[in-house]
View 1 (tube, rainbow, N blue to C red):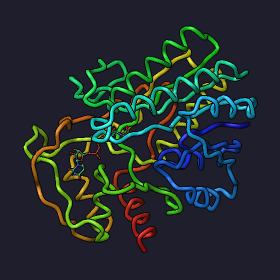
View 2 (cartoon, helix red, strand yellow; view 1 turned 180 degrees about the horizontal axis):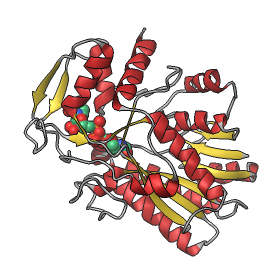
View 3 (cartoon, rainbow, N blue to C red; view 1 turned 90 degrees about the horizontal axis):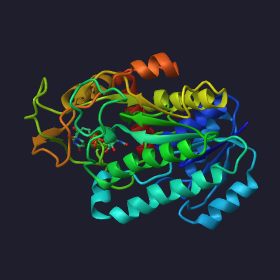
Length: 338
Ligand code: WQD
């Protein structure tokens, strides 16, 4: 069965392509290589031995999107990762984010309504919750005013899908709200490839440890948490990828309760920044050079998932630990800088 993965050469996308191929699906990747490299295909093939179809296409071009779907009417499901995702950049260039994250979603959904099988997985984010009032965060937690245009595009994206599912009863969609995906495939054939200075914690840690960065700045240690640093739910990217296959099969096998469902993807455990650093030092056997600096604008104090809905209804739970993720991230960093 043929599955389309947009953004399939990206961090979570490439790991999901591997899990889809491992389950026997034929994968078509659309990627415009704006935040990834065609090299990633070689990594995927080294792991699975299967070559996905790769189409270098910019989803902002409606004619190209329509042309693609006319060529691939036998698609059984779509997993939509392609989007811009840098919070800071979205504040500086909001229109780039609304065009790239919303317009492209509309073009894909317009085509999906023409397909025989209309199964759609949306890459959403815990960002939609902002600073939740109650922890751990459940899927019915109130959606807070977005802290950035990026976060707003995820909220709007879910609304667009919900409204479309109301209008087209045969469209089946699931939004997966990721917490903090980290790590790399245990094979070290694929992993995170941040372009330029990493915004996220874990790639910054591994790049500091390998000598690419001078020192990690820890953004604040005066938060009301166990050690004063922010709390997040760091989830191994392979666990996130496996959840996408389970969610897609839920749609394909018509197991859904409604034609638009939402699931948190997290471990259910919060870790502070210092705990992540400790985990890295433990698995790598080396001290990390870091210093405490001022808080980063827009950071929430704590966010971690209530995983009951995903565990009991989706039938998925994480299998890998923070240490597994940090070890895989470090092995990947050593592999690509080696
Ligand atoms: C984690 C913690 C920082 C860098 C991101 C995305 C969000 C969503 C989840 C996709 C925070 C601290 C970080 C550094 C630090 N992903 N930190 N020094 O902000 O939780 O959210 O992942 O949808 O969109 O933005 O992740 O890795 O940036 O930060 O101290 O150099 O690490 O303050 O507490 P975040 P992050």
